[in-house]
Length: 275
Ligand code: MN
Image 1 (cartoon, rainbow, N blue to C red):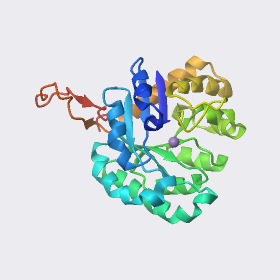
Image 2: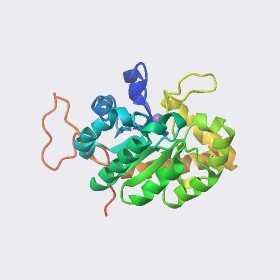
Image 3: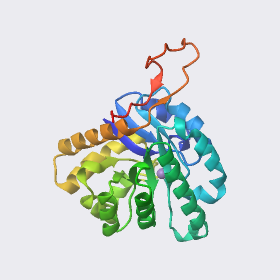
Image 4: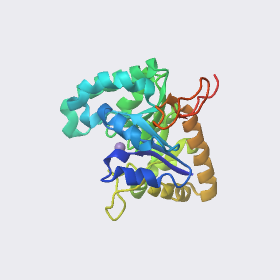
């Protein structure tokens, strides 16, 4: 299965072409957004594709200019399959926005909790410790997937202990520090991502979701396991995450009659496991 747990479909120059390419094979693509106002349009990109799920996000790098969109996020959360990209960024150039980032991330975790929990795709650059401690303060926010984790080994250990998943991409696997972290990750909670089109391949070309397929082989080599074993484990993990996505009803395309009550026709998303 093609698994890309963190990509920005709406930010490719031709998003519809990238989305259409995902109709060719079974996939689980978590398409993240960076602002709540981008959510509707980005959702439409994946609306007809059963494997593409769109996240409601507010990127920490945009926290100060877009904090006003939190109200929109609040109004949309009931119809969002998952939340992301959200998180904290402790880079020096964002220091001035840190208090706003913290307030916003806590509000988002509280919102996720009030909504009954969501899968969350989380950015934690230079902020792994603060992200983990906020997740501990909101234990019912849902299932966190730390994307492109770059903290210390100790921070990784704590994140794993509190139940975080990790999405790992080709760009992370090219760095020595990234590979060392992957070696310490819980093997049943590692999933592929690309972070395309932001993340690039070795030649500088923006990654496409299909490039996430390289992750299984890269990780298998690091772990000293056959690629088939790693791929099968990641497929299982992807199914587990898919089962945790929030089930939502999307409007039917206009030529279709309204679905009879009780029918699942026209529904997209996946029911949560019972209980
Ligand atoms: Mn991203």
